[in-house]
Length: 379
Image 1 (tube, rainbow, N blue to C red):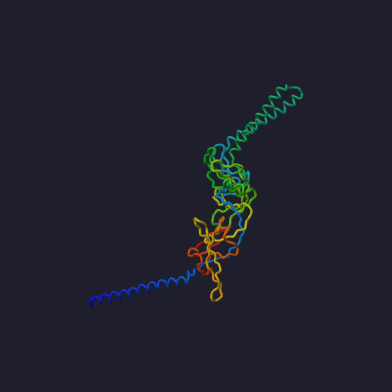
Image 2: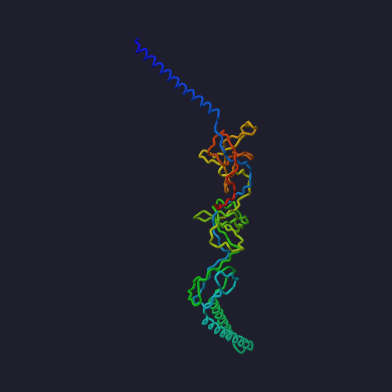
């Protein structure tokens, strides 16, 4: 072997040793890093928690309905004529029987006086002939003719008096008038709207429920009506009637609630949200909806469980995922049937970054809302 070959062999051997040392050090470093990170575990995560507890839960049925006056009518006339007097202002409160409008009725009133005079004459004739009949001066047939004439005259008076009364519009019941739509001197045809009259206290709230839910309510149950779905409080009333039939087209049942409306701010035709308590109240564990992770394979929550103590003797906490069976919701809350027991510490925020055994740091300075009846807050 010549010198050149020896040098080549020595060089290749040196390169192999160097490469072996390099790759060996890299492998050693990787193994040690794995051991280091394995010994460190998952980094702690900051979350907020709450202690699970039971609360009263009143099952309820919600629906959308509309307000309806207990008594309401758009007033009009049966006969035509020219408006002679308008005796009300828009928005007036009136009592039953109050005269609201008169049409010109001079001709009808003159004819009424004429017929009343004829009726008085027929009355006098009948009374005179009745005395003559008692004295046997006239026949029974003549007295019968006079009696029939008197009845015809009286019937004509009543008919004409009814015609005169048709020229007058009276309030059929007490309530508040709407906007006047006619003026003095205007010619009105039969049925022309004059003004609306609505009795507003109390007031009805009508709504429909599926036929399957009607057996959960009964007459006399409390109902809460809200004009604004986000309102903190509504107007309380009670169920006053349930229709005894199911609508064939919609398979729903009409239900009516009666509400007090002393301020008369609730107006007929207004769309409202109605909540009716259904059945007896229950006690459920309730959690904020933010604490639930909804999955196709099942809903879960994370519990904060104790995992020994730290160097200072303080308890260490770690995350433990558990499946839950959820129930109905109300506002920000959801009822929990299974998976969480009273006293468990449940993660309410920050659960998306957790996995089993993740160390936890608790910070409850900010909590998610947990209100059964939330309302919008102006920002």
